[in-house]
Length: 193
Length: 272
Image 1: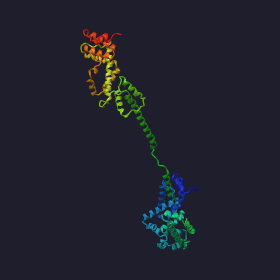
Image 2 (image 1 turned 60 degrees about the vertical axis):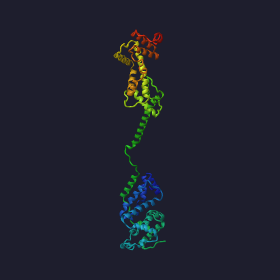
Image 3 (image 1 turned 90 degrees about the horizontal axis):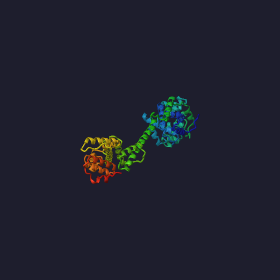
Image 4 (image 1 turned 45 degrees about the vertical axis):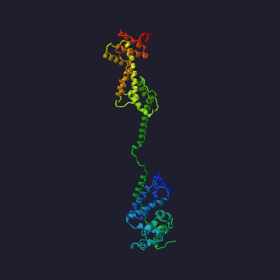
């Protein structure tokens, strides 16, 4: 049976002791959140996914509706991913910081892709649906995150900006360049609009 | 929602997407259930509040009862500063009944407790200093009891049971004293209690009291002058019959003794 309550109402119900409300909420977001994490940290998806939900569980008593539940949830996931990147010693965190200053910059274009995984090679090698996923992996993490947030959570640009802690223009720029690179990977089409 | 490419979205969604494993789902849901379920308290915790409440209630009631017991004594002390000969018995009754509910002032409580020690307890603690009012009361009690003894003795004399010998006879006097004491058990009991209650210093003070106060009619006369003195004391006390009886005894014992004019039977104690 479909629960028509909003995510926020379910979260408040669970805060007041309704375990079934949490189960509904979890079923709504488990796949999308998992994909959001798995496309960015494939080897640690389970661990990060569990950590994010445990943080949600731990914040139950203090939960207040100050934003959409999805924005709050993916903000937690974003922070956990940043922690994960830091723990891995990867230089991705610097990308998250530096891109905010120049929304028009396209670091993806400047980054050399692996020779065997260039979009052209992927198009030739894989004519399957998995082609897009490979292209996704080639994206810089901030742009990939912006695309995944838009696809998986259905967030608006403002919400993406809020979840990732950047300005709306930065979020818009990241998403635009992510889409352009992915279209190129699919067939060399140019960005629409 | 930002303007996404539908073809791109369709291609993305058509790709194989990972899902969390059922085991992972179970762990997260279990954590959520555990967070909501109330913490279990130890079994004895449910009894803690009733038990502590009962203990406080019992302590409070016992304190209140104790204060109500002390209050009537203190009130009685304040109302009757000079004791009567029957006072110890009355006080014991008042303690057992415990009807008065007046709360005594705090500074009067030690006096009340000391008084209770002297009347109820058989052997008060000798090291405990008694309040200032108690020795005075003890003196008055001693005087009263001695006068009572004198009355008893005079009655005994009248009955011819304990006629004093002409010469000093300590053994006979001792016998008379014992007889008088046995005839008045309440009096002897009170005397014992008072002697035990009065400290040694007070007893020495009592021994050094003036002769007129210390030697009452209870003293056994051993000379005609003492007889005269005791008869005068009886007359002053208004005990005419006893004075007359003792006067007759004096005349029998000392027929040659010349009576003073104030003890002329026709003047001092005429027959009714």
